[in-house]
Length: 254
Length: 338
Image 1 (tube, one colour):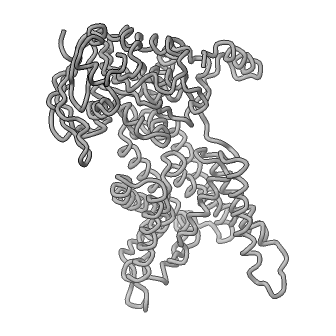
Image 2 (image 1 turned 60 degrees about the horizontal axis):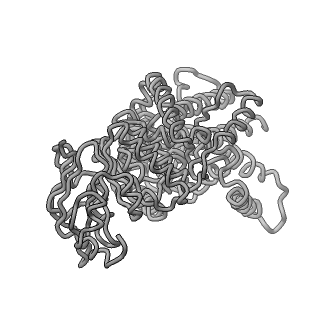
């Protein structure tokens, strides 16, 4: 197994707050890695840095051997490292189908000159895209809603749409920031199925989540963060017995 | 003559439809609260004028402007588009980097005020507050259409330009670029997360809109055959916003409809109202009130406008009523748990 993402000695502070002190972690290609830790551990900041939305003060992020820290988010995304957000960020005034097509448009095809000069080719490609994203919507149970505005969906449906969009965008690694946040617990099984669809397609997953049984059900290996650094890594069952991890969660029932 | 009057109103409505389509690219598609569009119309008008007019001679006392190339209208219009494109690129490259919403509006508004003051004071450029005048009728040195029939020809020409601009913009609207641009309008952070550069897409839309505004300026100055700083106060941009909001933000046909309503019905319709002795300005005041009311009523009761923004409709089998009904029923049947 090779590491698809390697983070080394990351440091990030906001004013006097040291969000990330010295974080190193790696994600194996094809795995589902969990990232857990108490509130304020720096999990979300780590995701922001890895996906290019924040610039680290120090340290390196390597994605498939390429150094990516400091790249603009859309450049990181084009390399195949994509992310979801704590609150699903759909494009509300676009239909579900259009949301999918925006995600499916890859590098270069959204150029303005192509809209003006090669419309027929774009038309054909868009028809192929529509077939492809239609199949993905079917898989996620959203096909019947394809003509609805994305802003009118329920919280759980928006989350499913977010995952469907990620599948359509064909990433190599996805960072999921609290996939269960804002989702009705009865949707849990749907969300788990959705995450399994990433692995079926060979997409590596890292997910930040507070619901630990959810993490245990999905993740082969889990990284634990506290105070801006990694304090442990292993299988969830082992980590439950780990003294440092228990302490980090202040004696709460891990 | 009433026919000539109608032709005049229609020509102006068609020209301002082109301006409104330009603002629609910026405001409707990209979501920029842009006040610069009317300034670019002015730049387009001036550039076309100094390309088309003859050079200033020593007998023109008190008149001064640059160039004076005696070029045909086509060259003037193309130059207008190039220059407005370059200015849009510079202003957009600075303003689009950080500014959004009302801050963007204030900035672009200020740029228009500065430009207007500059053009007014620096007479060597476009003859200051006097402005440029005496432009020849486009194509008429070749066509030699009699004066009273020329209005029909120019109206037809403007309609052709409007149709071409509309069709080009439709192509852009339905292209991946147009779709990505609207996604950026909805949520630029999410768009960046899917590999689309918000800054690049916005800047392109800004330049595209600016060039179309410049083209409309070239048409306007050719029609009026004169242009000065009084013709472009920032308040004119508000009128163009009104056209878009009433007609349908984001929808090209709606924008054209809105422009015809605002210019044809409100601005011109009220001229036929009887005079009230002692209140010479009452119809002008009424026009302003009528447009404001129309905008408020639109925003309250139909914020999407008369013709809302269109979306890809992935109908199942056909376009008929029955297949739509079938689609709706099947849609309910396969709705996922929420």
